[in-house]
Image 1 (spheres, rainbow, N blue to C red):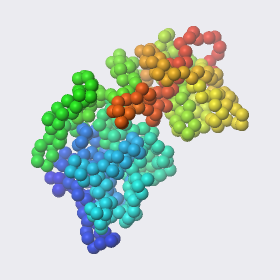
Image 2 (image 1 turned 90 degrees about the vertical axis):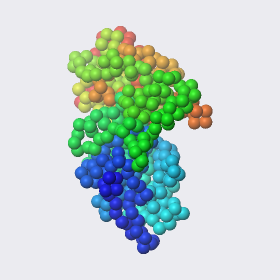
Image 3 (image 1 turned 135 degrees about the vertical axis):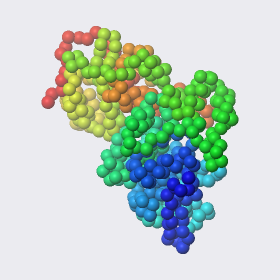
Image 4 (image 1 turned 90 degrees about the horizontal axis):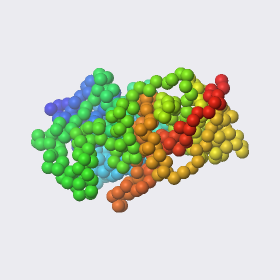
Length: 470
């Protein structure tokens, strides 16, 4: 079955008369075959693979990409990206990684390691950029979405999102219109990470006939001998090793269900707001929260210059904060955000900016600080929230969480950020440091912390709410 459905072509090496079969040294297992059928025979352009850990989802996606880099396989000459949550992870897992037999992932490009296959398809490779160029002009590159600016203005023919649940979803927003225009394909593979953007994508794809969509647990995957890819004995070993690390039985079982049974009810270990988000969902506070037309809107910001700026939009109702909207962008000047606020139909009461809103580096005129620039452009009044201890701000956010409601649709990306905001991991000590890890989730979480320290719940004064000037 696997052989009959696996597309292969013979590629002539320019440095040898030897014929190379592509995909090289790869044979799909039976549970991987439907993916190949969907992408090569049914000609689907989008795929979601929610497969359990160690099921071979990256190896499958990589070999599909290699096959598509040759017109002989029905593909085309072009550039193909393999996106990971971070550059370091991509280098470790794919560029330097190998499987349980010791076979390097990158040796699926014959000629990548000269000692293994001296006459291959690789023309050159760049260790710094994690880029391979082939003899026919196609290229493959590993990129971390922790630096998604590197993909702006590019024109890939195909993209693999590895562990999409962990990635900055902004990268997909950048590449999706490019792929739609040039007819390229995209593969999203992941294990679940709670109720975040990966789950949303899976739910959408599951009901869309134009997408290949698959969710596979350890009960669904067998090797070539008909044995479980990940046996019950290995699952028990995983449980015991995590218990030995001091994890609770409840946390260990949650991890097993998430990683090996693909449950979306799990969470990111070390995350700051797991319990608060679980309570909000259980209590129905993540739902549809309509904008109340006659009530003013507060905004709460995290400001970035060479980084992202995030804005929460909320309305007070008695002692509650009802979040009706969220916006985030990267590398834009203050005028962009003034325009966004103006285009929304809201009537604004106050805008709360973090302490660095007083800095002179946010595209203002000479000698003008960020706050003055913002107010000149119609973002007013702006209140600067004093800088405080980060841990104290996180504790304040946790305490206020029970007073917050969220519009599930308009605040989806902000909710993703809150779910993904986590402590920094100390690889040497194998424990979490007591400090936040700075990644794409930090901006939405920091803007939420601005809310927690802003004293928005003081009595509303009689001054008029503010609309941005036309």
